Image (tube, rainbow, N blue to C red; front, side):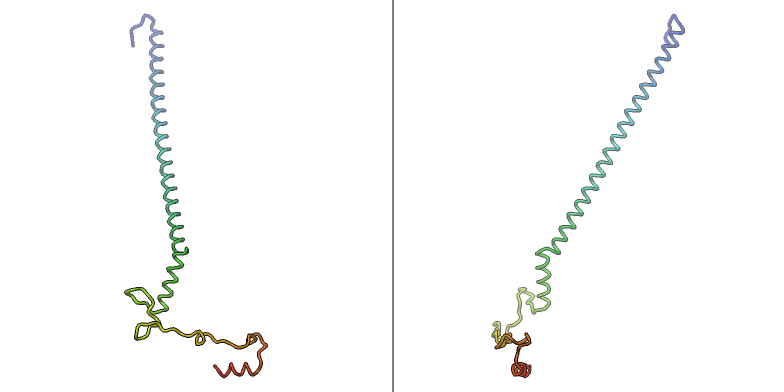
Length: 140
């Protein structure tokens, strides 16, 4: 305590200094708490942003894989796999080898041998004659 002619003024000055120190400490503590709160808020905002980015990336990957599987290219890939499983495919070229004779030429079938043509268009509609039905029966 400074020497002062009035001891009461000295005590008041001491109390004012103590109050000033308390205020300064409280102010420093509040600033530190605010700084800590701001850092916590920034970290939580960054975590939320990271989580949102991860969710967006996962959603984008999900949509992309869905489009690859269900889109045009996916359908084409599945169709190619199906056709390859149902036909003879040359593994070296990936081309169809079915229908080739010993000469390597493709055998063609005439349309009349593949499709059954009827003379009248009434067959199957319930208007065919009995002779026509019998004729078709004999063919089978």
